[in-house]
Length: 161
Image 1 (cartoon, rainbow, N blue to C red):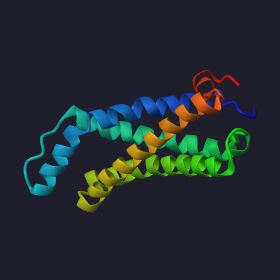
Image 2 (image 1 turned 30 degrees about the horizontal axis):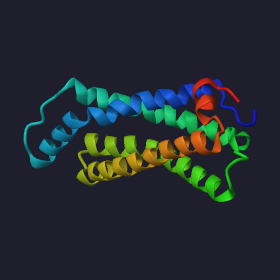
Image 3 (image 1 turned 90 degrees about the horizontal axis):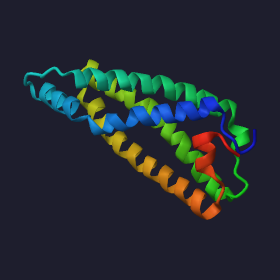
C-alpha cells in the first residue's frame, strides 16, 4: 500500500474538509451569541448555532477515526521524494491538525455549554492556528504536486498511485 491512500482514508479526509469549511464560513451566529452570553445580554437562538455545534461533534468523531486510522497506517505513507526535514514537517503538520480537530470541538463545547469564557477564547485562538496549518497543508500539497511531481492530488482524490 506504499504511496496510496485507502478508500476510507480518502472518504474521511474529504468528509472532514466538507464539514470544516462551513464551520468557518458560518461561525458568525455562534460568535455573536457567545459574546451576548458573556456580556449578560439576551442570546438570540438560531438553527445555525445548533448546526455549528452538531457539525463540530461530527468533525470530532471523524477526526478520532482518522487519527486512529493514521496511527494504524503510518508506515505506508513515507514519501521517497521528500527529505527528512520535509517528512518531519509533514508529520508535525498532520499530527497538529489532528490535535486541533480534536481540541477545537472540545474547547468550543466547554465554552458554549459550560459558559467558560476562557475556553471560548481558546477556541478562537486555536481556530486561527488551525487556519494557518491548513494553509501550510495546502501549500505543501501544491509543492508536492508541482515540484516533486508525486501526484499527491491523484492519490488523495482518486486513490491512485
